[in-house]
Length: 173
Image 1 (cartoon, rainbow, N blue to C red):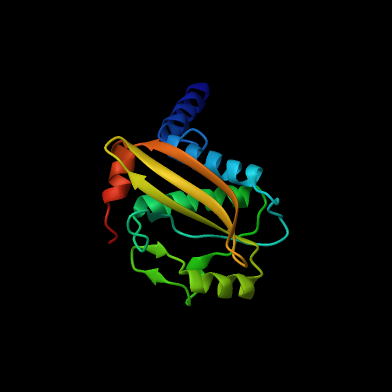
Image 2: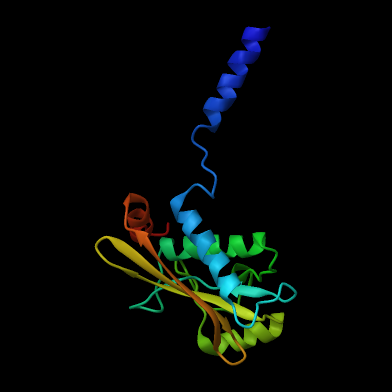
């Protein structure tokens, strides 16, 4: 009986061997840290009683283009804001924003005010990234849509490794 329980425990542990907590994954940790910094540095403070929108992060040289990396980073930042207790409006459920197949939620400036008014959104999290041979530079801002005032900004540099390279080059299916 004891040997059976021991074997079961080993099987369960082996099944968990490939799981990695978000806090331990370097890409997720960087996204979470960036969201934490954006919230902490915001002036005025971004309140938790009105919703935010997180738009897909875009290529700084082609603002109408993103990548799997830009979409994943935006999703991770959105997840962190949700974990911190901020209400978020999920853009993928709206039909009237600029969504291009495989590109994500790319907000056009003329639409931001309309969407924010319709959902009483206090701020929009936007981001751009630039790629160099060994780094990805991510620039994030919290912007108040009523007057385009930047409430907070934070920059991070990610290593261009196998994971980030694959996310940059992946094509939607």
